[in-house]
Length: 331
Ligand code: TYM
Image (cartoon, rainbow, N blue to C red; front, side):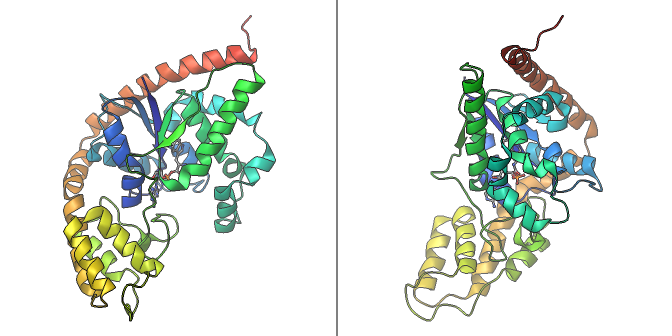
């Protein structure tokens, strides 16, 4: 049976980038695979070491996981910090992870730029914790967006290195996976290449955003004076709007506005109005369920307990075997 693992950091509500980069694949994959999906609260401390409401952030993501259709009976839904075996494997993997390779990681370099006042060891070893998350269940596939490609590559490096160093064929080589043809990178409304909650709040549309907020954000999205020549390539911010429309709207709608652009007749106001209504329609069912689930603490508690139990069974087996392979023995 194919083992699938993936996680999302609880640093804010989930946005459309999270949905199309990861969650959509989670929902499809849970049907036919052994899936482990978790909320990466340890990881969130690398950028937010003193969160105002860690528990509330975790609850938001849990609610949004469930609202999107993740089924706690089919998949194992758990909270990263409920599984300390991950922390032990992280420690062991760090012994064979080299500072040079960690420093070369693109996301580390980016974080140094974003938070020069807090270049902590957790940031440097972010990829080993992520590798531990994945190989603790000896995963084969990892549904993620394109921004996680390099982390996956490092996971393969650490898994292979473990096998080589200890002369075993224990960890499989996990590969990135998405149901789209290519790994997805959902762009931001601010003209940035990636929709993100950390860089700019206005770049992201959240699954829980009410209709009036969605309208406001989309109408404020960055545009320009419009094309002056036929069939010209689009500037990044305009390309972004078209990518969103292609993902969310009906194919005829996308074709209609593409044609208007190519013939220099586009009015961005009209395009944005259409796009906001399509986003509102798409997120409607999530909004309803999110509201219901937030009020149902007893159910959430049950989901978390079940997830922790199932995740433990898998992780404890791996840790026992890893300890044995390395040479830890009990007296
Ligand atoms: P995070 O929390 O930044 O994002 C969660 C998931 O959403 C995807 N994503 C996007 N996909 C497409 N376009 C975007 N604009 C976009 N923004 C976010 C991410 O690719 C990711 O799949 N390191 C991970 C969390 C993690 C993890 C793991 C993932 C920790 N351990 C083990 C997989 C396996 C992260 O920061 O994702």
